[in-house]
Amino acid sequence: MLSFSLAVLLLLATPGPGVLSTAGVGAAFGFHAGLRYVAGLCIGTNLVALIVVSGLAAIVLANDWARNTLLVLSAMYLLYLAVRIAFAGKKIAFITASEQPGVRAGLLLQLINPKAYAVNMTWFSGFVLIPGSLISETLLKFLVINLIWIPIHLLWLAAGNVVNQLDLRPRTHFIINCLMASAMLVVVALAIASLV
Image 1 (tube, rainbow, N blue to C red):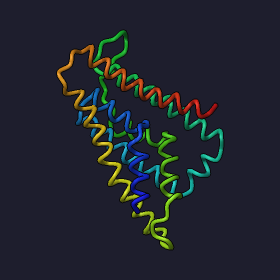
Image 2: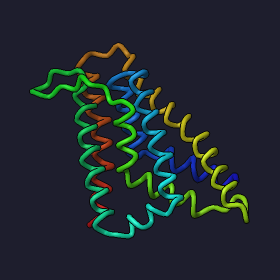
Image 3: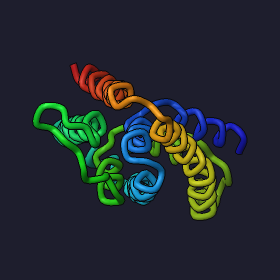
Image 4: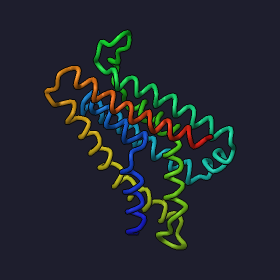
């Protein structure tokens, strides 16, 4: 159980689309908007876990075309979120982002997030917690994952919100938002590089 919990903690704490976008939404739009976004991510990550547990993910991801399509959709959506975070509330050129990402945005990101599928496959197939009782083990894993997932994402949201609350000059705030968005783009670039 300890090794499973540690694996969950390490895989969730490392920057990926979910935590980076959570920090970015917190920095760009504040804590309350971020809570709605995190709620969507939480629903989405549990749906992804159900897809993995059902075996549907293994069938879909075994197909190169489906896996690559999922990766491209994820990259495009992360790019869209990165632009919204970078230009949140700023009048730079012609781009503004006044609409705050909510539950739907978080849910959509998790459903097309390849890391969410890979991580859930590792958790649900790589660790045996209760030999001989698949249902009990699966329920226990859902519980442990959520008990770790929720606080980590709330911490990332709070970190982003601290930036939002600081009395920074608009240009400094814009630079921080761009750095958050750039970090998300690095994740996209790494994912695309894994295809080549």
